[in-house]
Length: 361
Image (cartoon, rainbow, N blue to C red):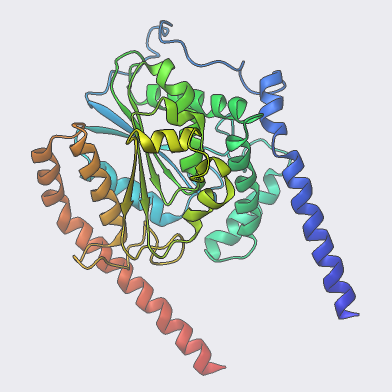
């Protein structure tokens, strides 16, 4: 009886995964067909905004757009450590316009709790996740978003999907005062599946913005995407304890060395791809790239170390003034140390409660 029930559940799970994979491209195709959302097109750099509608141009000399990993429910509902990481990044990256609120798993930037057929279901999962960050049901969110990453990497449906995300990135930049046509460089920092979507969107961002596009992959899972042909540089930050980031190499034949003419291998040969070893960082858990309670040998939390690595890369490429970068870090270090200490204290209290609970039982 038990074996029959388990077999039924396993069969249902497999069918659910297959159904999800088959339906994954339909949101992009429906948007392209005009069934919902705005007309598929990139914002025109020649368009003149209505009076009072255009924000004042931001004084930053470059921009960084963060695209979250597959655990995101919407642009705001991402792990708290990533939200805090973004706030710290704004303070430690001087002269840079940081855009943290693009939801990369929808062609219309509509989160899973927005006006969707299953919005109530995802709101329920979101409430459960707020109560327990390790709730197993969030696997449903990860799986759904993983399929969207696969759509982005697909040579058939990817162009449609990536066009939609590129349009949303441009709108998010404009809302914060980035002027299309200014030529100011844009860096897409994508975590996990967000790195692949960054590469896909770059195909359309480079000609639309008429600006250099860089991609910084944070433990990214990427295909040999055509976006590599228009990116100025791809930096891949990887942790030695992160096997997930290797999936792109294993799954996409274009990244294998036996195909030297693939987009990936031609970019490698041209020196456009640089691998950055982040030490003992992991993809998930407290030791991930955004962790506040795990530290490098130099004494920085993983979160701060990731921000500072990005800052060093931008400075190397001339996008941040090195003196201003060092000054911003010195000014922010006390706040960063205090935040790290507070998170470590919270983690210690949580462990104590777990031990007490075990003792009571």
